[in-house]
Length: 130
Image (cartoon, rainbow, N blue to C red):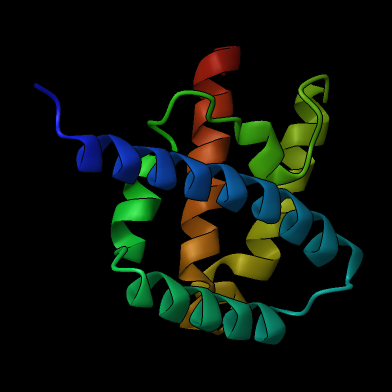
C-alpha cells in the first residue's frame, strides 16, 4: 500500500517545480530587459531559499530534480515560446549567461538560476539535436 503522505509530498514538490519554471521565465525576461538586476535577483533567491528551508525542502534537491519532472518545459525557464528559433534560443542563453554566470555577474548568489538556465539550455540542445 502506497504511503498517502509520500503521494502528497510528491504533488507539493511537483507544484513547486511548476512554480519555479514559471518564475524563472519571468525572471529571464526581466533580466534580459534590464528590469531586474543581478543584485535584486540574489535577494530574491535568498528569500526563496529561506522559504523552502522553513517548509523542509532542500534547494539543491529542487535544482537537481527540476529537469527530471514530467511536464518540465525548458522553454519556460528561458522565458521563450516553444516556437522560438534556434538563434533565439542561443541568443537568450547568451544574454542570461551575462547576467547569471557567477564569474561574469560577480555574485555567487546567482548560481541557482544559472544552473536552471544551463539545464534548460542543455535540454533544448538534446531535443533539437545540436
